[in-house]
Image (cartoon, rainbow, N blue to C red; front, top):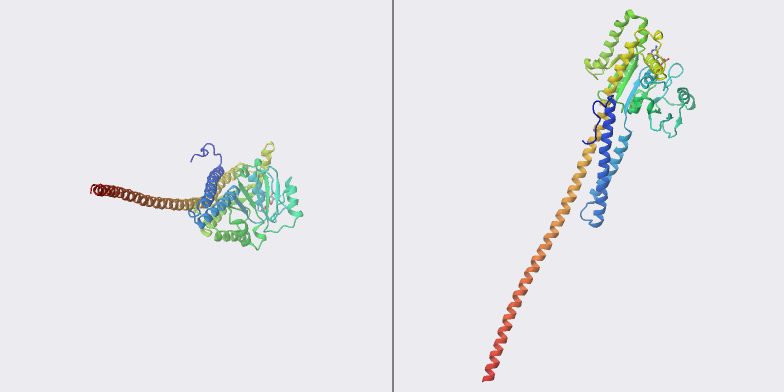
Amino acid sequence: TSRNPLTDEQISSPLQVFGQAKKQINNIFVDIQDYVADASERMIDVNKICPDVIVENELKSILDYRSKVKGICEVLTRDHMKVAFFGRTSNGKSTVVNAMLGEKVLPSGIGHTTNCFLQVEGSQTGDAYLVTEGSNEKQNVESVTHLAHALNYEKQLNEKELVHVYWPKDKCSLLRDDVALVDSPGVDVTPHLDDWIDAHCIDADVFVLVANAESTLMVTEKNFFHKVSTKLSKPNIFILNNRWDASANEPEFLDQVRKQHMERATDFLVKELKVCTPDEAVSRIFFISAKEVLQARVKERNGQALNSGALAEGFSARYMEFEEFERRFEECISKSAIKTKFLNHSQQGKHLVKEMYKIMETIYNRSQEQTHSKMCQKKEFQEKLNFTEQQLICITNQMKMKIHQMVDDVEDKVSKALND
Ligand code: GDP
């Protein structure tokens, strides 16, 4: 309670609520870690002096709790929010990831099909590097071209494989706030959907289906999410109808096409997958152009002005819709990740503290009982000692009187005999 949480004014993005929760739960676990360490050291000491007070199992449990808490602390410092992007090849998954990051991090476009899973996350060191699965080697990444080269040529990558791309945190607020973004190979290229889900999706907080607004949702795309929702209860799914800039070429059909996509996507989420209500679906389905957003953000980053002449009709509306998607996404991922990542740990923490308290209380009670019984023994012994002392005094007094009498008697008898 006294850990100075950020005030509402200080929180500029819902993502920071996750960061704040993570900091708090980490602090609590550091306290629990100190408590367990202290308790186990004391128990080891007590056990050396009075081996009868602590039962072997109790000492073992406390030592087990110590390593459990250490494990949880390690997981907690690594915890992040995870969003996974799926869709058919060339729908624009990498472009959406880049648009959200605000710069070209992942290679995209013709000749750069993502052929493995790529997880972009913040780099602690400030350097950009990649680490392939099963390796600890940090391969420096100087540019997108370099990354594309490393991914395409330097190693034959398996489509199920996960490559971690660590990108400087200060370059992107999403990475600063502990979001990891996972790009995937197209759902159309694999027969191994189940393996994908088991390996990369079970711990995702949010899924983004990047669809192509120029066509309808494909069976392969739907099929993938049907599989996801059989393995996860109520996954958080967003649908991005990408390439919406193409609609600018056919303004006469714009409203009609949007309505049709909206109805189909809503039916998919609400009726087929049953992952949200019709009201919620409105804030889960968006019409965007990732390419335009990326271009605009890269220009802004380089201090260049947007050349309004080169922008397709309706750019600002699409840009605003992308920002609205980001806002809804941030709210959703932060809420979901706090629940999935911390609820379980906080319950485990509570359970551990309760169990430890029980053990310490049992030991305390046992030591009290032992002290009490020793005191009783001492008292009993004391009473016996007092009684014996009394008896001795009595006997001594009686003896004294008797001797006195005897002396008197003898004196009497002697003086009588002398007289006689
Ligand atoms: P991925 O295979 O799903 O990762 O697709 P990419 O992100 O590599 O995109 C494939 C191609 O589509 C690239 O040439 C992108 O520039 C282009 N693209 C992506 N998003 C959009 C968009 O919103 N509008 C248009 N016109 N092109 C896009």
